[in-house]
Image (cartoon, rainbow, N blue to C red; front, side, top):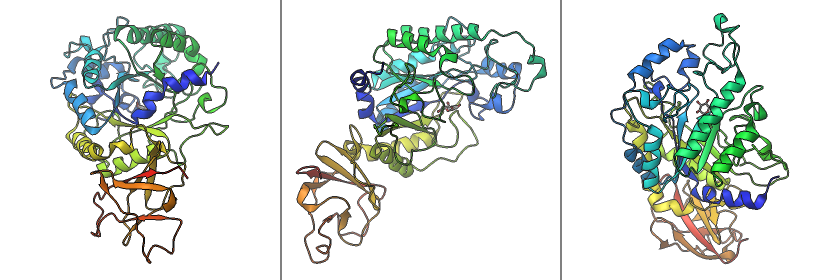
Length: 435
Ligand code: GLC
């Protein structure tokens, strides 16, 4: 049975945190054409194994990653312990296809967890339900498997339950050998393979048994497509704790069938790939990502921003630069992000609004002629207004120019035609009472 009290308590820190780092890393960083390379190119196992033999991340210093995340204002991270290719970044006893058997020679998950915890970040692991390396995972005619069109695989005997034992066994290893995990991010369900096809009740009971406070995504039921039973009034045991929209920010935020606000996290890439892709230089500007983070919060959601370290273990320089720029904005403005949610007011035409308690954060993204209108906020309800970045007082305008519009508070931000922060100038409004 869904227990709202237990649930709300479990997701509390996560809803405060709002901003996290996704890390997609594996031997696919060598071909450097994204993490789906084996499937997209229908690459045979032998060819892919050459990357396993070659993998040697000499620059792997997870402390640097953790610092970059922390500096950007992120509060948690999620790294791929195993992606669809089946390669394990952790020292699983159940397979040889793992980091400890590469030139890396160490448990990369363990080092990641230690480094990020040390920076005070919450830690999560991504674990792929798909596995293109395991002999018992469906090959021929599976939608995604690299060997889906290979006739020779047609009559090979496979025992899916044996795969599930393996998969459950690995999840048990992750839940029992690495201390407290804050998030488990399963990926993903498709076709017939969803819910109990993964023996999901058993899996979730096991995970929660070892890690009672852990937060789980919704992909034991769905993928980026679909919301799952979490969006109904009768979520299943394996519905998970948050909806995981992918490469999109839900237009109106997300609500359950009966109108309850759902907990959600939009995962997005910085360029167009999750795993390292050498030729993909299509990076979004930091200004866009800052605005998208604000958008998520204004719609009660989180943003999980991806980095794809290269084969040496370096986060691409472009990504680091974006993180630095976000960090500069966050240092001054994070009070409008952490612990904040939507204001209940409609989106104003010149920006967005987030809020916490009796404070509203009005994100001005477009300048006005003269005093800046705070749409939806009436003058009488305003106690004080400050520029968040430096705490300086902003006066509510009272003159013939604005007085024709008595329902809107106008503030004087600056005499300059330019906003102090061209991306997002945050105005902190303390309300006498909420409108
Ligand atoms: C997808 C992809 C995958 C990526 C994930 C992130 O489901 O299969 O490569 O890890 O989305 O959300």
